[in-house]
Image (cartoon, rainbow, N blue to C red; front, side, top):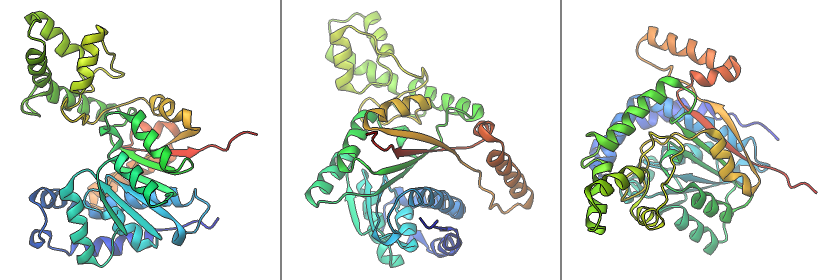
Length: 336
């Protein structure tokens, strides 16, 4: 199959998107802040999206024009805009945040391009919509999302039900390889659990929930179960307490909001990602991310280019330097 090179359109699209004054658009303050932070590195993020798109497109035996892509957790929708600019036939945008879904509608009007379908919800909403409309997407891309999903088994079950042969590509900065990033994220997780990164923090939320719902518990029992149930949502806290079994975290620093299940940049070993998807006959290939080399400072830019060179050409050792990783889910042929 012909290789698709999306790179030439990325810089032009970056210039177009950077020229927009997003503060003048009727979008939420949340999305204005998000885009304001992203805008100086717009070219970098578009290069990441382009890398995902190229990896996916080149692994699928269909033309770009006939492809259906899911932009999962699409945020402000820049991946969807890039995909349509590159010529992808159908793009389905999905995000749980209604403010983000409204933002991409407005950006589509502003730029003249964007996703064909805009959905607000999660994996079950996507599965239902695809079934009702008899759509079998070829490719799913999600950036900075997989580390936040509470139950990956339910997530992948929904995705498998959409199309059992769909290729999937994720990026995550919660890399289990880079020791510097791991230390930084461990501090962030512990601050969400016990500190002030979240107010109230997650331990305090679980403790208050247990105090309210288990009034016969002693102070020591409350503290014990508030500690044991780190990384669980409220219904699972109840199940753990009623079973009397202490849950086990794969990585002791991981923690999530007990109300929503949103993980704080959860770090998982790649073998866990592999085992979760293995029942569906997928394999997982890990790709190395790269640093932003398009910087105002020539010195900073040169340093980033040198590090990217090392990452790219140092084999598996490059994973120790990479700021993020690609998780490429490849459907394996069924053995006869």
